[in-house]
Image (cartoon, rainbow, N blue to C red; front, top):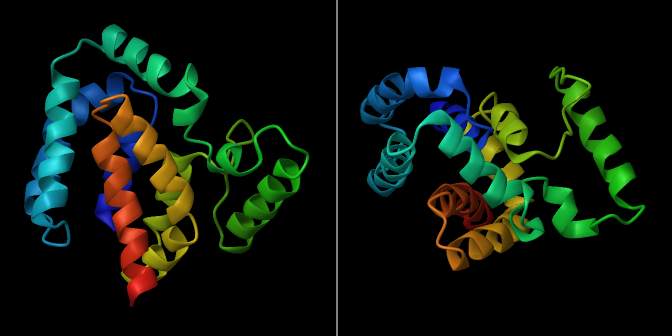
Length: 171
């Protein structure tokens, strides 16, 4: 599903490719009927904010938001285990799950990084994607709450991911 690819791209470290493709992302958001009106508004709000920055400024804000504040970390197992030994086996299990599903990840990628998870989820059908995200809904809520407290424009995207997981739990 396209929305997951879009969110993965918007939540990943910004680069020239993102900046060059923002107008195409905007067009895709407008054209995709599977993206709800509130989701479209939230995605476009973040893109509008991105457009207010040059690449270097955006990269700096990204690092300040996600790399310098542990409560905003996009590595989901960090919120469950911290630096505890239990994190390693969880990461290995997730890597093996991806491999069994046919997804090859680069060795430098940590499998619990939310943009990578969203890329994987984009390969699933809607119900499978929602169920997979439902397993992470509590962690996504914590990150979203923390980003909202910091008044981060990224908070809205976390809420989209969280809400899609909650919809699976309600079904």
